[in-house]
Image 1 (cartoon, rainbow, N blue to C red):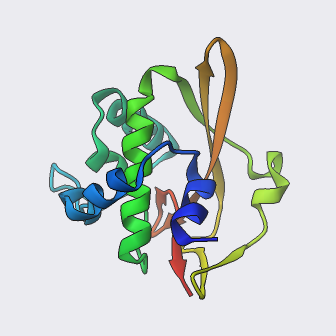
Image 2: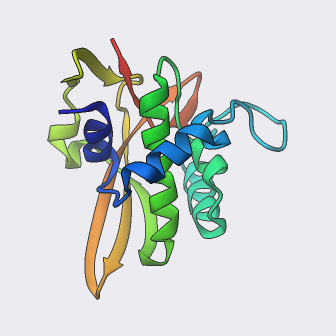
Image 3: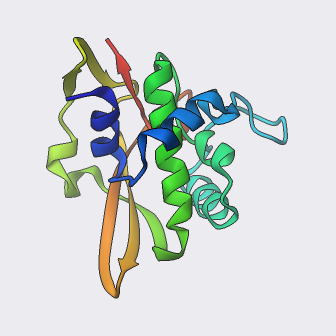
Length: 167
């Protein structure tokens, strides 16, 4: 399984062509920002409420860079970065389907509690932060309610989406 397939499975099922991903690798989105636009603090969010607010506002504005600031990019290679940024672009394109987002207890998804490694392209990948929380995004597609559940970890007291990185 390729790294791009692995990251798509881990975040969401994005419907992007190879050209979309190649274009993103060449764009500014291939190198996510390392500081917030206002120059204050660091990436991530200080609280669950702030995380949820940043996520929903960035989605509403289709602000891919702000969504990227909620991710921990430590050790992530260029291919996985580009794939994740393409997934965020796809998420923004589908923003109207998203109805709500909230944190849920880790105990509600036992399968996400285990530390996992994934082998792709001869490399071993694992999330770059330990999962401490889950973030559930509720949506509706063609009138059918669905949800996506994402891992969230903490680094230096701030909340982030972990990203897979080579081990």
